[in-house]
Length: 152
Image 1 (cartoon, rainbow, N blue to C red):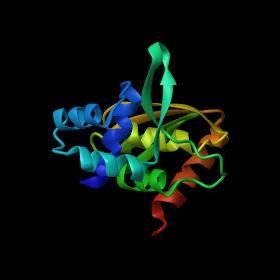
Image 2: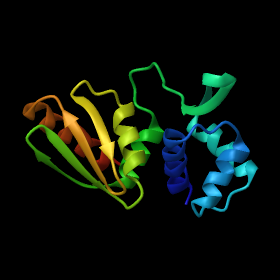
Image 3: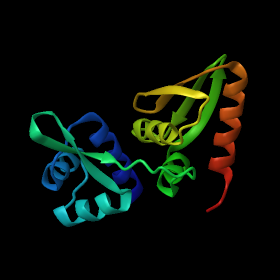
């Protein structure tokens, strides 16, 4: 439940300008996750969310981007938990996920900052990744295979 809730939080803060814990709790409750403000507070800490300033003097939650080269354990866990399969069509990588996890998995792939990946578009259970070349597509598939097959 916690992993799917974390995935939903990543999805929600990517879609909406959420400024407070109470607002995030309301979005989660509307999405079927029965949470309290205390739970949301722990989730924010676990996901290492931070606030940035936006127009109008407001703020919104975002995922704190780490400057280090290593990948966040959270992103790897989201990738592992949501990944079902993948296939390539030339330089397009199609990733199938557990229903409702595509946006979170796409965010995880984007957060890995792989040079080969130009960008990802996510639906409910499918992600389309634009990869720079056909050879790069095979390389990205191999990286994903290694990540999802390793035991933590």
